[in-house]
Amino acid sequence: MNLEFLADHFGDNFALLIGGAVIGAIFGAFAQQSRFCLRAAAIEFSRGHVGGKVAIWLIVFSTAIAGTMLLSAFDLFTATEARQLASPQSLSGAAIGGLMFGTGMVLARGCSSRLLVLSATGNLRALLSGLVFAVVAQASLHGFLSPLREALATPLTTLSIGSNDLLVLSSVSEQTALGLVLAGLAASLFLALWRKVGIWKTTASFAVGACIPLAWWFTNAMTSIAFEPVQLESLSFTGPSADTLMLFLSSPGSMIDFDVGLVPGVFIGAFLAAWVTGELELQGFEGGGSMRRYLAGAALMGFGGMLAGGCAVGAGVTGASIFALTAWVTLFAIWIAAAVTDWVVDRKMAGRTVPPQALAASPDARGSELQPGI
Image 1 (cartoon, rainbow, N blue to C red):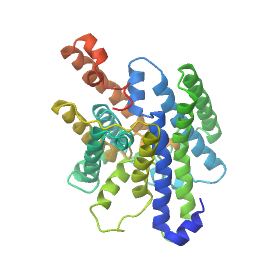
Image 2 (tube, rainbow, N blue to C red; image 1 turned 60 degrees about the vertical axis):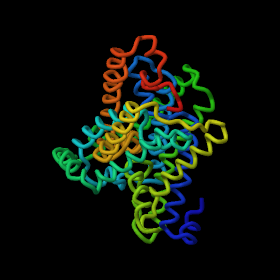
Image 3 (cartoon, rainbow, N blue to C red; image 1 turned 90 degrees about the vertical axis):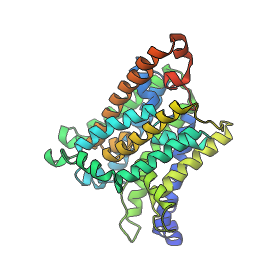
């Protein structure tokens, strides 16, 4: 991709949009094919089974971190210039927002990125949930929910500990961290082989993880080309979903950047991948109770993701790739909340009202973690 050509012929903003759309399309296509999903991995792990879904998530996670660290090692990217490390972040927001996001993720049966991917395949539940997610995220950023978000984010920030860089705080060298990450990547590959994930899904998982350093590289390269300041960023879906929503409600051309290209790109990539492989299928809600559950989960994710400063991808993979402490706090909180919500809602409560044999057979009762189309 000749970035100078794009910037010269289309302008800086449209070059950013095109880059976001291309990287988003790659992410969407391979996320659809790999079935990458933090919710599925968290539920699988919490139920005492470390299987294929955990392996896929670990491959994406470790590939993203290793790729980002290699970019930094070759001076192709400076992590300290990213928003997560360059400015104070909220620790209280990361913890509370992560818990809310993890709870909502289980209720909506998919995180924000997963809902976007599924909506492209014809899943109307995911499409409506994604719209609710975007509306609540925007309301949390600039709307009537913003005072509550600010109140929850204020009590504890990284100013109190002097840094948001986990490597600096823990005195761990980048070489040691890279060695541990590469070991984790090797372990995740072994797990994928052991659990018979398959060559294609494993390769697709690599591609999903590689989109994180690719986006870091692209936005970093654009900072040296563009006339106006460019935000150094990678993939996230809370802020970009809100921005994309506002694009359709604002005057044309008022909001053109990397984030606005990302969301449509993911949708198009996932749609094309599902179309080529014959996986397009219209799916709707199965009743009022199901609809309430999805929309409540989407609302929790919208507010929680904005409060935490990132979603399952934005904080859980992108933020973690530069070792932002708040991102790791958010990720840990998401895992805990997902496990607890699954146990309370999809196992304990469902088990009281549904016979054991029906619980084993019903996708709705079980939380549908084994259903790729949910």
